[in-house]
Length: 113
Length: 111
Image (tube, rainbow over all chains, first blue to last red; front, top):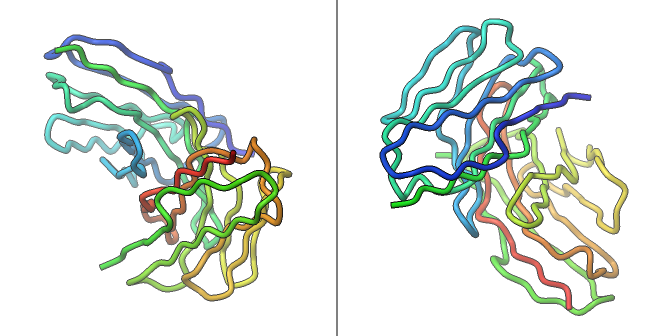
């Protein structure tokens, strides 16, 4: 089955620092997604990537769909305390119904003021 | 617009009691539907996913079952809860090559 390795598992940073996290897959994906989850809530979509090589920004967030289609990264610039949460990558490999998402294990981000 | 509703938000149940968590989707048709469990605030463990009515795949052997009686309704059930069933349960939906949307989650505590 599909395997997603997400790293790092956790990060402790100071406010204002930049953050980088990534996911790698043993297989090719057609879609990469990045989510953020705050305590007691469901994950919320941050960025969606649909083409190999695609680089997409959403405010201070930037994500890229790797050329090999087996990896993706998420960068957060100038972190602020409200960036705290768990960040998940997710990949989808198929083009037909039934192609379910596979999630990484998450990166727990802590931002110290 | 597409929305997903999951309830209840929190639930405390005694060991051995039944469970029924419900999830409904609006604004789309033929969605893929998912039930995840999350323990200790880390990692989404896929429990069940469904590509259509009465088409459900189980990812891990467990004390839970799922049903999809209608296109946009997904139900997670148990006949007898165990302490180990405690956790944060999330329902989600997506369509082919689109992003997944999650419900608000249900915090289940089995006592």
